[in-house]
Image (spheres, rainbow, N blue to C red):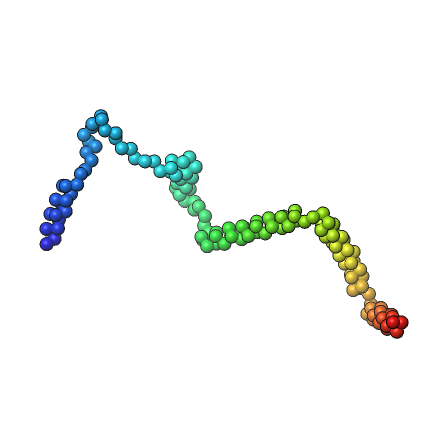
Length: 144
């Protein structure tokens, strides 16, 4: 049975047309093998040459695992995207908003030293100031 199948295949192979390139006929156009555009590119050849040299030297291209490289690439892209968004937000602010932000920052800087001075004051001075505030509030309520 197996021998019959092989015989049939041999017969089929004989029926199929095979190009005879050995017989040179000047009227026929000889087919050429198509070039792979990637392999034909100069940058690909240089990269391949560099990889071969590194392989011969025993140098690895990158010793990091693929997952770690992908995660680092994503982090880097997220940081770049965040910076771009911040720059766009700053650029899109009108001059009025920019001036308000500057004033807000200036006021915050002026308030910080005052808070530090209050923190260093003795406890009895803080209590006394609180009592004065309460006293002024109650006197204002009486006036109303």
